[in-house]
Length: 282
Ligand code: MN
Image 1: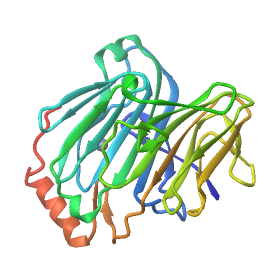
Image 2: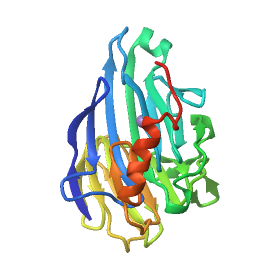
Image 3: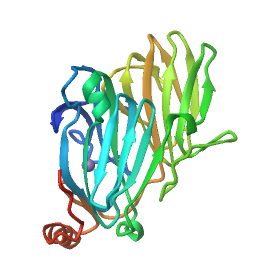
């Protein structure tokens, strides 16, 4: 297991912590990028995110909104709203333009805002698939009881015991949002051979076979041969576990495009400039 600290950066108007990619860590295939915002108390009248129209091609931008209100618009005419605990699993595929802002209601009221956006790669054979969205409400996400003090995991993708996460994915992967109670010790089984990381959203505790101390904004890349993740919470803590079958293909990326070759990247840039990914007026 190897632990990295997040790099502070910015997206739109938001202050963002970026654990991935990181110095010496280009990707944890199929996971490419992780942006974490908050939890932050947003003033009434201001946008929590404020990300204007921009394109994507070749991967899946996935948004976990833990708290707040988020409005998504895209060049195919879709408008989606996310609330507390909702997830949007977007397949950019061949290309789409979208924007991400606070909902009108959340902008008016202000309040706590907490989200993660994760970029998940698509295998070569699905990079140019039709763009699509999976909007999942908190109530559709199964909860798995963990530990002995009321800790639990929300199963967003994959199968665990007899539960099935609602996200449909192109490569086999598991996505968990874990809420750990102070003093609780819990274990989550994962698939040996998958690439797995734990990212600490809030709190702190000890993680892994060596009971290494981890705190918020740290990412732990787990060894590939492990089959269990063990965590003991020092305080109320939340983290995500992402575990997926690695995509063993060349990668060529530039900004919002993630392809296999430099030629495909140039095509992506050209197609975007020619309006082939659509138009989105702000
Ligand atoms: Mn985006």
